[in-house]
Length: 324
Image (cartoon, rainbow, N blue to C red; front, side, top):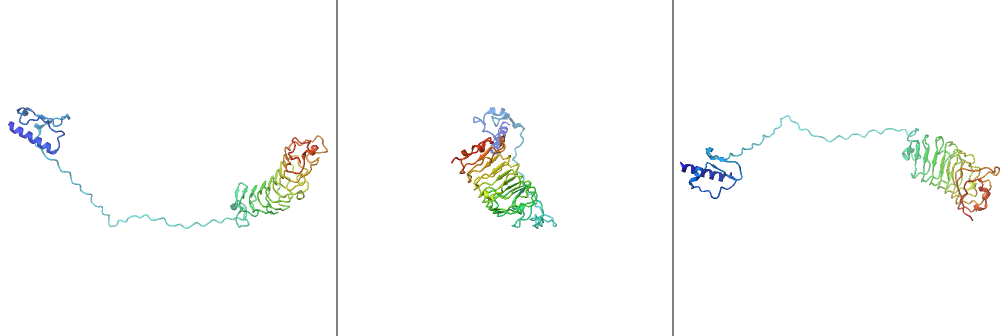
């Protein structure tokens, strides 16, 4: 009986060793021939494990089952009436028919210019203001009737015609600075009864036409303006005129009379040679004081302002000049 039990244990030991289930080698001092081995009912295969295997309960030892065979899924066969969906590229659409715009009628686009283009496509129109700066213009384009401010600076305009601003009753500002204007029609600005600012600096103007009395700001600097090219008493009726810039021209005398509203008078770099006693003051009223006029520039002229002290007694500030 003891031999049979010993043989069974040896067989179990060999089976476990061959199958690789032993987590550690059995003790090196194991003596299979020791008689005390028969009294051992349990055998700890892994000394680091807490599991104890009861060999008395093992009736038979089997082998591991082979892994189950993986059966590939059956092929999907589409039915006979199956139609595969294909995404087609979008079909080209026809260009919409362009809208017909009546550019000749008054409105946002304004009347046609000499180039056959509406003014507000050639220029920029924003809330009554028309901006045509630096647009290579050779003439003033037709403007919408609603125009209040017109800017056409730094172009190649050579003439201001009588019809350029006709029927523009709301026009308040015209700025044609930096052009090549040599001729201004006598009726170019006369009908503009709401005009406040007239900017004609940096041109070739020799004569000024009749100007509306509503003007507050006149700028004709850097031109060829002569005293003979101005109307007599040209600024007398301008009760709102505050800024008058006439520097760098060819004026021989100060244009008088000047309105009491005038604040700034620039006449530097002209050909003014004398100043009369009533140029700024009222010789008939010794108590008259010109309070508004605070900036008079006469430097760059051949006049010695120190020779005319009686001409300044009504001024709050003396003019600036270059003594000769």
